[in-house]
Amino acid sequence: MKSHEYELEQRDGGWAYVVDGRHSPVYPTREAAVEAADGDTKPNTFDQELDDELEQGLEDTFPASDPVSITRSSHTGGPDRDK
Image 1 (tube, one colour):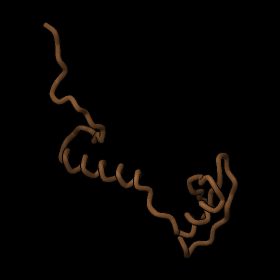
Image 2 (cartoon, rainbow, N blue to C red):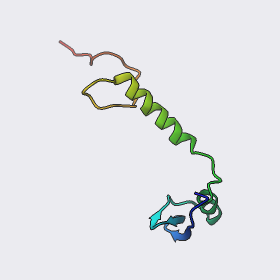
Image 3 (cartoon, rainbow, N blue to C red):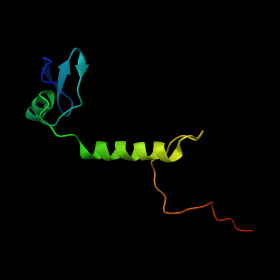
Image 4 (cartoon, helix red, strand yellow):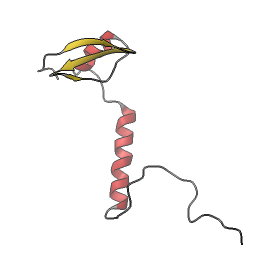
């Protein structure tokens, strides 16, 4: 975002930057918001891991009519039923 001009705005829980009327996520400090607005922050690894899991889920289930699920289960197969 280095080419865009932005404004800082104090929000509940921290600071956000505003570009073209759109608010960023809230950062805990003013300095963190400035770094993010200037593009100096590293990508959030948790978000990247979640994106990677979603992508893997899409690849593993394509083509299918069921919605994609990125939840994991240690139990395989159907539920146990008592007769």
